[in-house]
Length: 632
Image (cartoon, rainbow, N blue to C red; front, side, top):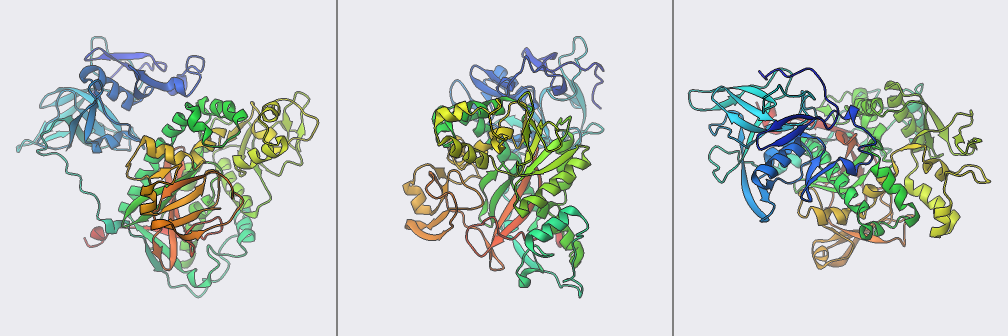
């Protein structure tokens, strides 16, 4: 049982106690953070001696800071605290020297020791992220630890630890820490040592568990009946968009579904969470380096607005979609669609509805969590008045907007859908009003930011001076345009302007330069290198959408496939070839959804073409138990 602490909550940044080594522990009660003291996202980054410690005042930041101040070494960036359990080295900063790490499972015969890292799995008090603390005292009956981001209460006077966790030693010498009530299982401890006796030996999963399987369900006699409820606006809009009650219009494939193992789903989940963090890290790097930002081919006059959007810590994205190649060769990410990502309705609702209609009870719906995650994201969005949903006339945008509106409504967020901008007008003070005369302050859009920027480029003829002077915070002598709404200082837009950076293909070479050989990344470059020619590559427009204007080359520059589109003539980047697996005669891409930066479900996109495009089918995806589990 952990030691009781005082009940007083301290404001963000207040010192809760002093850990051994004279290291301060701070409150991380973000609800009390002062925007004047911490006005930007950068102000939340913690540094010592120009070495990045982490995000103020998270558990990982404290662990890295304590190790640096006491031992002079740090561990690499991690997406989640539980990922530390898989690290195998730390870096001595002043000597740029690597030292080994070993991980020991809770219950190991190798006991924890002073200065080791105690790691929790996700869940309980540490939902999603897990947790890390530093062990500062070990006995046969308990350990004492120091940590951040666990409660926000000051330590009792004279105490130099945050809490105490009970332990017991078995007859054969195994050390077992008891998880406090309401918590989550303690994974174990990570020790800086070369001695690997009793250490965890990480064995990669069987590659066969990453194979996507195709299965077919025997359709019931009424399977061809209308199974979507056109009395519901979202489903009616979907039926109108695709022309029927199906996920694929190919009759022979309407009983087809794909399966992935639980192990594959766990890998997709891990990759989604880790990659979101890496893309955010790369975004910060780009926005602090003008030479890199230049490669994104965004209007220079808007650079400051993009930086302002990123620096506003409340300017968070709601949801995005990662696209992956998953096969026995492993898992590789193609890109991150942070801005106006599609397929949410298909993943979160339709693939489950299809399974119920046809009687498919094989495994679990891979998108079943998405509805709840979206509701929760909107619930915590801070919206305090009407949210305007802005969409174009595209039929797909209609059902996508209605589906998102359902999540908003479930979260208690009042919203209106606006089709086009013809009904908008200017307020006397320069604000923008909807057709009912209500001021627009919050916007969720189906339009991509590039659509708005193309509008601005065209009207200003790509002239930077005109772009700068066309500031949308003044009232011009014309009706409001899309860009006037989206770039207004008083309007908060989802997804925010800064998502132009991680959605742009130019982020991929930046990621590769920052995290070379990272297991989920593909070698990417702004130049066509000899190595890419040797492996095969995809040539992609830096600014592009929906698989347009992509060319795929096999080894030695042999063109295998290409798509047309509106992005021809744009600057290009090059990405190592990672072919999609062919399953049931279709090229199958796995897509995962991040909501508030967390994995929230998955779906497939499938096509005869080597390149998945906007019109590619979403075939239902199910998650089945690993074969070994089935055999028990």
